[in-house]
Amino acid sequence: MELIPEAQLFLDIRREADAVGSDFVDDVADLRPWLKTAYKAFLRRMLAARGRETFVRSDRTSSTSNGVTLYALPTDLFELVAMRVEVGSSWVPLAPFTEGEVPELRETSLATVGYPLRFRDRAMFPIDGATAGADQVELLPAPKAAYRLEFVYVPYFQTTSTGISYFGFNGLEQRAVYDVAAKIYEKRRRYQDANAKLARMAAVDEEIVELAQLRARPAGELVDVYAGGGPWGCR
Image (cartoon, rainbow, N blue to C red):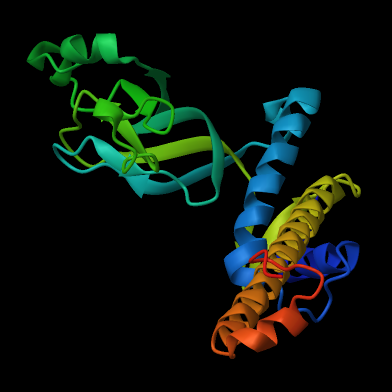
């Protein structure tokens, strides 16, 4: 898989949408969030077609702290596949858990092992409906010391020295480009429709101003102006 710089994808999007050099859309405010959403939709299709094992990577840069159960997920994470904890010279796999298993996992008898046994991705199982923890993973039982963690996951971008880059798949990633270009066309259409409505409003405002001006004229002049009838039904 090749890496395609975000800036290159922005340019491809603008070319597809006839928006090169236009300030109608902004790279950071508009294109970046649209591209992230579109690329995730593309990646879901790729995972369904080729399987997660084609795309997974491993991250071992995090460690547990005594008594802490919530840990940040990798910033480029799209889907968490598995987790492991280093115990001695071995990497022990952690099994996922659900809300119904929480009371048992918090029992002190299980916590005596010292390291976590289970995990859940809070993006999949938000605690008490909270969304603030969506970028965290919960580990139980609470660790009693520092243990290295391994995240096995599917990423959707990579940070390089020049910024963000997305993974290319022999041109198939252009689906995301077409998706965002379509959003630009839709935004342009709504903008044009809105301008058309505003123009009609301005025309009505002009008529209202004219009516106010006519009201200020002597009554005899109204006969000439509205010889054929008018908005006030004058004759």
